[in-house]
Image (cartoon, rainbow, N blue to C red; front, side, top):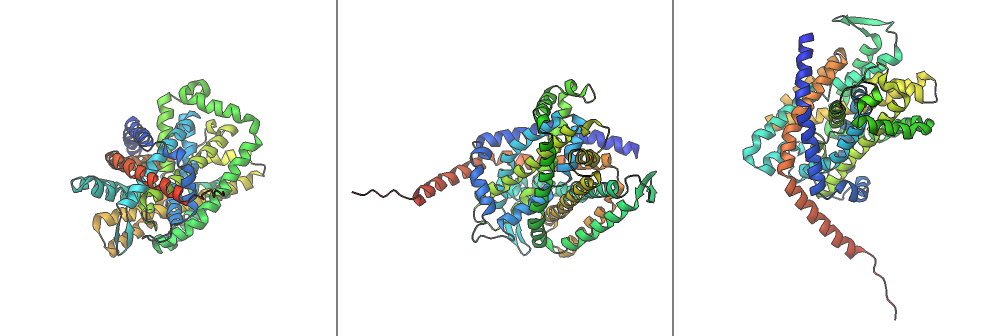
Length: 478
């Protein structure tokens, strides 16, 4: 097991190291420039479209429902556990680089969503779209091999990385820490590692619950996500805001620490954390995992929206990164301001300790609040990623209901065994899967960046003319 772990660590460092970091940032910066800083200047219109569904249009779910389905997969352990892991391994400066990656990722997420709707197809099972279709149909049939690669990596990521293991591991770890922190009630041990009854029971409950929802398909997932995601995000953001406000006098120094550590980690950490490049790598790698911009996953859900215009739906898709960007920033600030990032803790324990210290409740209530938030976020991610990976498989094998049903049950089985893998092992798999998915998608975005810029420019020219025609005219009286 030690040799496997060492191999995975080296492989993950290569894949999610400097090359991927440079590619993700380069694509985000390029798209930001070509789209004329769309994440800033078109934000008001994006927010307007987010809350106002289109009338008519083909698709399986509402525009907001498609966004919530994408968010259900995006807002998960990456926002709670991933941020904590990045700050503990890369220092507070990792939060700065995570924010930078998220900002430029806004333009990336817009482009992904816009292209997904533009090049989607319709079949018996409904609307289908994502990188595999905009690579094949946008770049041309000769690039289908690249689309196939993305789909293969998407199935792998859903089954063995982001969709199953990392999410269920976060839920059961939080449940174990809350219900049995001293591990007094051990169900069994595996490879010398004890697992409490709380971990076993919570893992089984999540698996059964996931199976019930997943059998209903995308419409049930969307309906569940439309209710749960906004509600739980609101509760979690309120808790983080309370922590920050209760220590508001420390906020300026915390921000200064984050900025300083981004460029000189050792000056803040005392040598406990390594170079600037480690902070950059950990921050951006976790940024990719938390907001999924450039990964190519979210456009698979966005393609199911009932929408008549691909640019409009791209703007809606972009708002999803703003949501995750805010959640990650507040989580990171709470961790830095409470000082739990350098206490030798791991994963969710870092955020849990920040909640215990920072919230004005007894520790048990604070821990319960985090456990509930993490459980719902991670649970919806399990649902969303099943939809992503199933669509990837459908692209590869076609309309084969029996095969897709077998895959769904295999996915549920992986969820069940996920809690019994170590945290470090889990995150290495997630990093590898993320990188493998991102590479084909980034190539597609680069190739279609000119088309995206042209379509966006034409849309806003027409939109400007329409706004002028609909504007109330001043009546001149003589």
